[in-house]
Image (cartoon, rainbow, N blue to C red):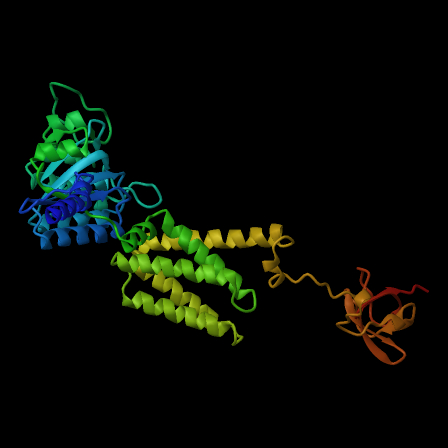
Length: 445
């Protein structure tokens, strides 16, 4: 009997230790051979950094044997080149690609969505307004617009959608057919969720991601969120069109300050760190090649040598090497040149403001701004002062127009008049001496 009681006691212990804790984890499910579906987000500006993230997501989903990949989209667009690369990535994969617009797929975001097999939208979602805009806010040239118009048309056609609506998102002059349920507004086309459903640019409207999963029949599938790595975050952040000129401005300002101050301090550290961050992000995004990195490192080395070897030539070559490396690291040389010019102008303006306004408050400028004055009262003498000539008389041996030469006690002296002309052979008197400047006045008979 005692043995039976011990067995019961052990069974109760096992029940409390293993069975009861499992009841607190109802979310754990045994999926077995259920389908695998990836979930990635396009929620920032379309950049090369975003492309690197999506490329990794597609490759990992393919390697894991996923059945589909859902891209949740909320973007106002970005780089045309990056969007074109993402479109090619989506077209080359055998995965079932699904766009969930929640709530915006504008400009390059619309192009990305059109390159997917299916499009679903939230009730407040919008898609369209895809005209190409340059970095300075103006419409792109005719060549770029023509390329983008053809790209939008192809993206719509390859997935069985009427291309006229995609083209109207790029060109406001395209006339759209009348629709019985609504009328289109003037200007670039932007479709609401209900309009997109009516014209065949959407497969459905869903209120949430969970509802989308049910609508797609993936209730039993394993949904795997594809998170961004630190490198992806840095690449997307650094390649953002607003962040690039800021990083370049900090880098330029830091290096300019270091050139005017001895040693290497905090400004130089911030400048180099900003540029390293710029190159790291662009390298992860696949923009900066080995040649850019080599030119940048060479430029930094030349600037460091310039601190110890006076002359300025090495510093000039170092700056040139860094500028060239930045231009080569950009998505295109033109836009990067604009960003670089903006950065240099901002850096110079900031330098002037800091020197003029804050030089008395910031100790950093003690190394840059010379505060001491070498006055005569403090004993500083650049040349011997001829105060002994004051009130003495002599004769001009050359005309004074108003400068010339006079003779005082057989000593030739350079002198100037008070502003008038004095002929040679005239008697003069020294009326003022300021350093080596001797001022004379003609003595009238």
